[in-house]
Image 1 (cartoon, one colour):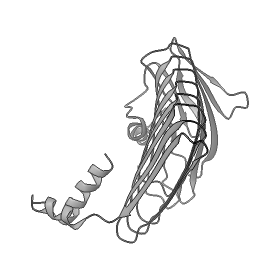
Image 2 (cartoon, helix red, strand yellow; image 1 turned 90 degrees about the vertical axis):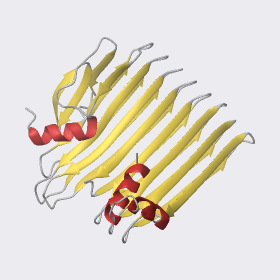
Image 3 (cartoon, one colour; image 1 turned 60 degrees about the vertical axis):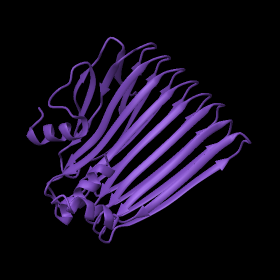
Image 4 (tube, helix red, strand yellow; image 1 turned 30 degrees about the horizontal axis):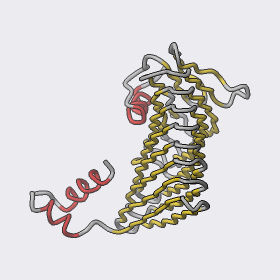
Length: 306
């Protein structure tokens, strides 16, 4: 049974207002709260019992699968492994994410490892949101790791968001691209208080014609800290670019360490990192419209993270 607090977590991380239709798996406090299959998307338990296996049939079109995790039990800690097998020429959307409500003094943690095996010419949109709330003093910790294996001509669009309530997170993404595969990653993070967030991207462009574009946007408020690390290896005729844009406020701290390695004469790689405060002219522009300085900051941040 999902209560009001847990329903709010589902709304925040997966835009769900109840049990979805079609293929889904809802994990609550370490147990399955519900599961549904579709004609072309199949969900089974892993043999070791530590997660699930999602299989998408070849040629599946315009289908989606929801796999949210919600934790409302203070002190609960878990590590979950989910494996995705996307058939050739499939086109599917995966909505994941984790929400933690902690109302106690003990820390609560979710480590999620998602491995994708994307078949030839398949398309995947992967949406992952992380959210925390609750009046407790215990930490809300989330450590997501995504491993992507893109077959020939495959394309993955990965959108990750963390904008509230996560005290500590280490976010890892590892990708391996075959010929003509394309990976697009968009990351949005906001931290406040004494929160800490670390992002680590590692991408191997192994096939001719492969391409990757990584964009990370973040805001560090108050005494929070962020680290951004990216490694992109061009091992064939390929193109790749990483971008890190961060706004610091109050006593926030952000470090960015992008690295590109061209291991082939036809590898074209670039990186860009920009960190700074909100420009004064931006604040003035919004304040001339009648907003207070705080309201102007909120508008600028909302637009930056949109």
